[in-house]
Length: 286
Length: 232
Image 1 (cartoon, rainbow over the protein chains, first blue to last red):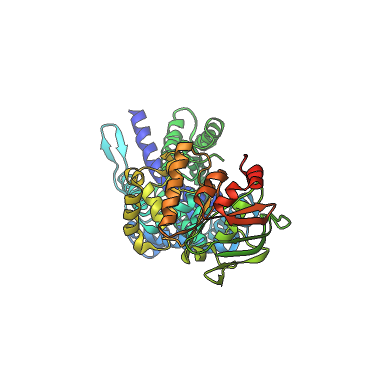
Image 2: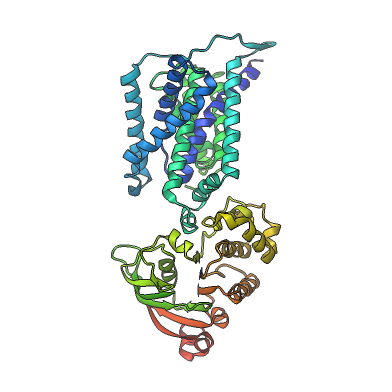
């Protein structure tokens, strides 16, 4: 029974992890560099949701689009100010710039909100029980939001002109330019979408644990690992990777103390880079 | 279209084209031949707007376009089909055509239908990812994507590269058909003899300069051209 409980917990964790992992991989697919500021934007999203909920009195569902917009806009704005100038120097310079940006955002939050842990204003609800199996209703709710967001994102990418434009640039940027697709508009859109999803991810993870300025940084390794395991730049890969990391972290609890669960991310990156560097569903070699 | 004394290359110090000229009259098909490294593909890329000129001019319908973006050139009727990486591999055939017609979204549905009527193989595989197509089918798709904007000038870079002789023959038939429908074509082709046999005129490019031009069949029959470039 313990194993079933672990599997359920792992699937829930994976669903939540998938949202920022999709954000990270979307930015990578279009802009071809790892944007580690996703961690900082997750924290921005978490605090946006927290303020909207605890000060604005908004229900949880209403905080998600707000967190998406705020994180997306700050993501695009900070990208234009700090990162876009670094991109011509190569992906490494841009990636290092995003680490600095993440730290900056995190410390800005620390300056405004302090270091203490905060929680959403949600009434406690009893866990659902199925025999020995316990499932907290809010986790199911969060996982449902995450699945709906994934479905909306899928429809956006598959059926809208903007979504196809992003996929075309991700597939073949030079050809996309030849066909008249505006590269700047597409990269802005990918950054907005990716960072917006990171913001939503911040809220959903913040609902599961407490919120402090390090909420994104703590999760960033797992997000990065999910994207790498699935194949950088592959959205279905990010979802698959998130489930693998989520389950792996929970299964690790059978063998090691909770402090060491983050090692799962490192281990997963190590294994995948050794045996299948392009990731499970990745299209490209790096 | 006329390219005059075009000088350009890939780096600051690098000059691949050292004063190349090329003219394509309305409705004409021109084959550009020459040895490897002569700058044939570079010339097409400079006309398509993928490379910035260091000097020289490119005129299209009597207007200088060398400072226009690739998008602007696509909008005025110039379509370039690169030799490699000329499709969106993870998108379906239909989506590739849609992206081909990106600058004319209102006409995509109608033109996709006419492309499917013209190239039944693309209709048959419309829901497949483009990367699953064979080499010949990919080249057909790449050309069909360019035709989605109904271009006045089609620039083809080594369309038969990597194809079997049978697939190459089928592709040349399609190029002849596109030309017959009134589209002007400038084509660089490794298979220089075949290209000259279907073109109206040939241009010989050597070391970044256009050294000869003339009716394609005359060039194909010229002893020196045959010895130097056609392996005969």
